Image 1 (cartoon, rainbow, N blue to C red):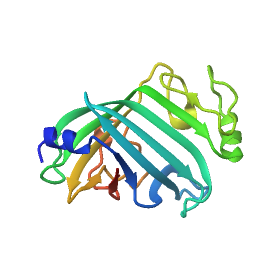
Image 2 (cartoon, rainbow, N blue to C red; image 1 turned 120 degrees about the vertical axis):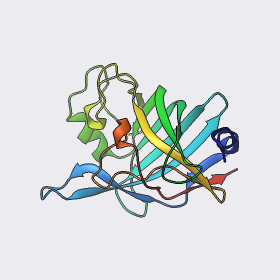
Image 3 (cartoon, rainbow, N blue to C red; image 1 turned 60 degrees about the vertical axis):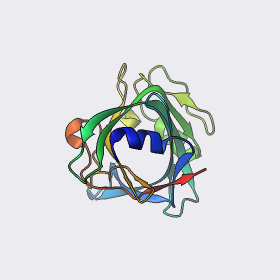
Image 4 (cartoon, one colour; image 1 turned 180 degrees about the horizontal axis):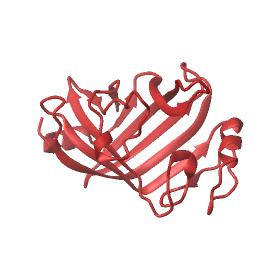
Length: 190
C-alpha cells in the first residue's frame, strides 16, 4: 500500500489490542533490570491526518489491575518510507490537541503526587488532567513541550502494526529512537 492508501484504509472504526501487550519500561529495578510495561491500545484515525490513541497501563500481565488511562489526540506527520518492510512508513504522532492522564488506581495517583508538578492539581483516581504543554516529569514532559512519538505504520493482511518499543525502554521521543521492529498488531473493531 502507498501512504495515501494506508491513510484511507485505517480510517473508520477502532484499531484495538488483541490482548494485553508487554513492552519494556523506562523504569528499572534496584538491580538495573528493565521492568515490564503492560498495556492495551485503541487507535482511531480521521481525515486530515488526525488521530486519537488511548493506552491503559496495567499492573499485571492479564490486564486485571488498571493503573492509568492515557488519551492522546493530535495529528500524524508522514515522513516517507521506513526500511523495515516494503509498505512501512515513518509516522510522527504529534500530541498537539490533548494528552489526558487519568489515574485508575490509588497507587498510581500516590506515586505521581510524589513528583513535582507545577500547574497541575493533586492527582486523584478517575479524575483526568490534560498535561499537553505542561511539565509532567513522571512522563518525561517539559513545560511548553508538545510530545511527538516517532513511530511507524505498517499494514499486513488487514493487521495494523506500529513499531516495537526499544528493548532498553527508550521512548520514541527522538527521530533516532524510531523503532526498527514491529509491535504486536492491532485489529479493526467496527
